[in-house]
Amino acid sequence: MDTRRLELLLALSRLGSMRAVAEEHHLTTSTVSQQIAALARDTGAQLIEPEGRRVRLTPAGLRLADHAVTILAAVERARLDLDPDAEPAGTVRIGGFATGIRVSLLPIVADLAAQHPKVDLVISEYEPIEAFALLTGDDLDLALTYDYNLAPASPRAVLEPVPLWSIGWGLGVPAHTAHPPDDITAFADATWIVNSRNTADENAVRALASLAGFTPTIGHQIDSLDLVEELIVAGFGVGLLPIGRPTSAGVTVLPLRDPDVILTAYAVTRRGRNDWPPLRAVLDLMRPPPGKTLHRPQWPRPEAAPPQ
Image 1 (spheres, rainbow, N blue to C red):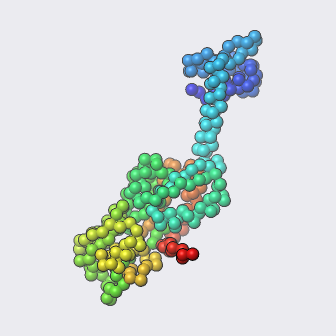
Image 2: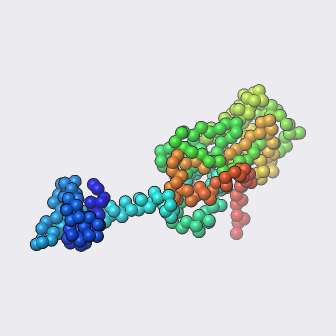
Image 3: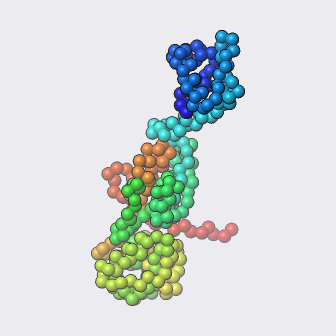
């Protein structure tokens, strides 16, 4: 159904004559008549009937004119929504890992609300593997993900990652470990703790161990870094932890060198979607300026409020 014909029908319902419609739309009366006739063929219904020297809409024509109001408004909203120069308006669905949300998203929320009050956010927590699948299935607009230099992620070709920031990681061990070694082979016989919902940690640990000449024993799979620390203190093993993040008294984070272990966070979108104004508004506030080195943030560790 041609929206241009719907516009002419709606004008006819308002103006009451083919001539008036033709004058308003800078057409000939014959062209307007032909377009209304074509619309009648499209719908299979009689849309107009004579009334003296004028025409009027039939009951079917009046119903279609009512629908035309809604249809044409929806088309106009879609046009504005897709216009890259339009004022951003809409809901952006964001999914990502918890620290990515804390470091990259939450700090821009106030500025986003002030600059683009018609942009709303829906935020969900997902590990990278989960976020990639949802983004590919068009169930997210933006994913905040991460990988390690020793275990690069391989998102599908339809996805476009933009690096946001990087941070070094070390090896979390019990604080009472005597004379922390510079060589991780001292922990070749230890049990290793990795993430349960994403393979990046385990892949990085296996690559690190392989370079050192041993095969790690993966014993525990934990998402929460706080819980990883508690398992380390309780003697269940060792695991990767971010350098610079405050740890509990029972944990020491040893630096890793040759190779370093670097986690990089990314904003990932479906290829070709970055020009959608609401998504572009979020990305513009989130990503580093062109040519700048990646930010090295402090890894946040929220503290519980003291009891009242």
